[in-house]
Structures are given as structure tokens and as C-alpha cells.
Length: 53
Picture 1 (cartoon, helix red, strand yellow):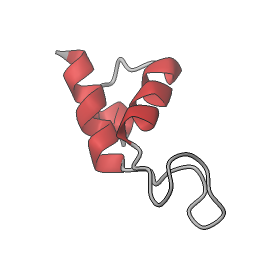
Picture 2 (tube, helix red, strand yellow; picture 1 turned 180 degrees about the vertical axis):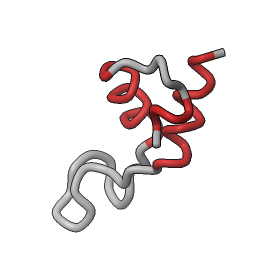
Picture 3 (spheres, rainbow, N blue to C red; picture 1 turned 90 degrees about the vertical axis):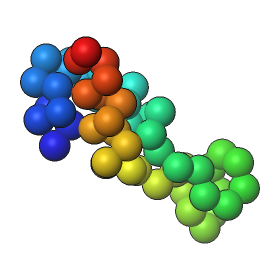
Picture 4 (cartoon, rainbow, N blue to C red; picture 1 turned 135 degrees about the vertical axis):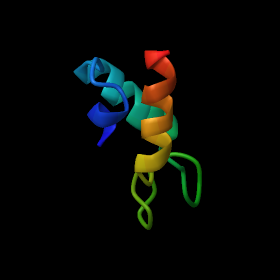
């Protein structure tokens, strides 16, 4: 899905987009209830598409 937003995206670009778009739930950082963060695929696609322009 992220590659469809920017077909030239590298693995590093995708990793970066996932990190920037993930939502931290609960206490900051990793916690027992929510883990690290919630991936937001839509936001990751937006981040990746912006990099293409």
C-alpha cells in the first residue's frame, strides 16, 4: 500500500514513514497494554507520497 503511494520508495523510506506515522497510545514509549505504537497505514502513505513530490 505504501509503495502505491510512491513507487520509488525504498525500504528505508517505508521504515521512516511507518515510524513517523505511528501513534503512541497510553504512556509514552513501550508499555504492557499497547506495546510500542499503533501503525497508521493511511498516514504512512501520506508521508511517503509527500516524499515523492
